[in-house]
Length: 73
Image (cartoon, rainbow, N blue to C red; front, top):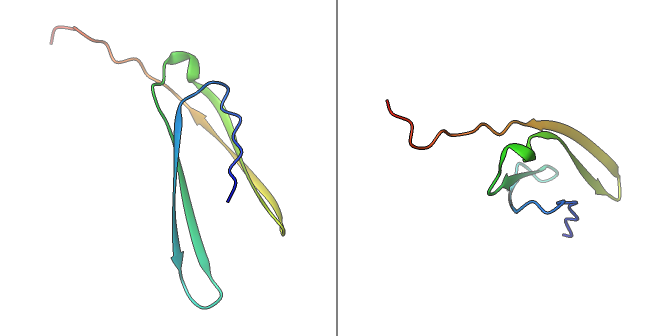
């Protein structure tokens, strides 16, 4: 399967799992992991899946929060 991604310079990994739920039903779950993020990577991202039957898309908001290093507790 070809997975085109407009990464805009962002490091990422993709993993997928497939389960057969019956003779006619297959469930595919994919995960996109964004690596080495910083505050500038925050925003709304769109995922689009296409096959011979059509396409579907959805959006998700990524919020990158800063971890304060060296802070005294």
